[in-house]
Image 1 (cartoon, rainbow, N blue to C red):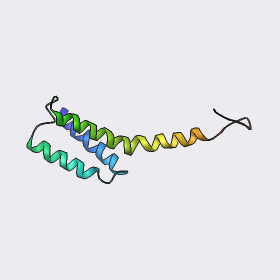
Image 2: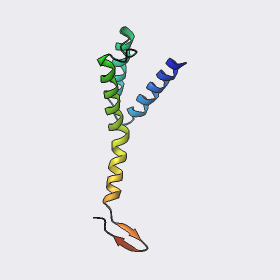
Image 3: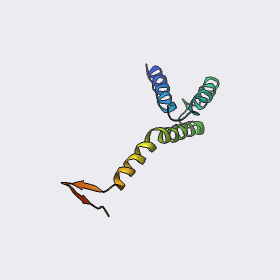
Image 4: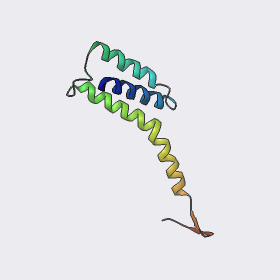
Length: 90
């Protein structure tokens, strides 16, 4: 059951990220091709496992977190308005 959940989670993550990053699917196919010949993902101390998680984290940050943080930054730079009075945040 664990392998099925892992594969479903991996595919759904890459499909979600694909909406904003067009180069994600070639990365996924390269990873799946590599995993099919060597079981480096199951070896937790293997250096390729660390590189895989770093790549997945960076891709997810660029596609999911960065746009949200930019929007929050834009909203934070606008002056606050409470009861018709503008407050400046310093």
